[in-house]
Length: 130
Picture (cartoon, rainbow, N blue to C red):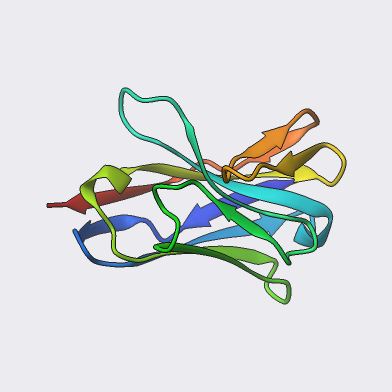
């Protein structure tokens, strides 16, 4: 059974940093494109960042570029989203999602586009105070 588990959310002041983790059980990331999404209260879900199955390319939405870094540790089957320079507008529930290679792909905008079976985590809450 496939399971994605996010962690690392919390409450920090503006300008601070957090590192989110997404650990997979039942799949190995090197065969999946993975995206981070976020959803703030009353807003639509937004694609934040995406990494290709090979792990050699990452994409970011414009509002987080140069502040967020998406990386992968194959030995731990875990992905990380390092978030620096956090702003109140980054406040949201953050989710990771994975789709097997061929069932989706990363868009240049940082969004993971999917048309196959997509696995989602339950999310981790990020709150940035001003």
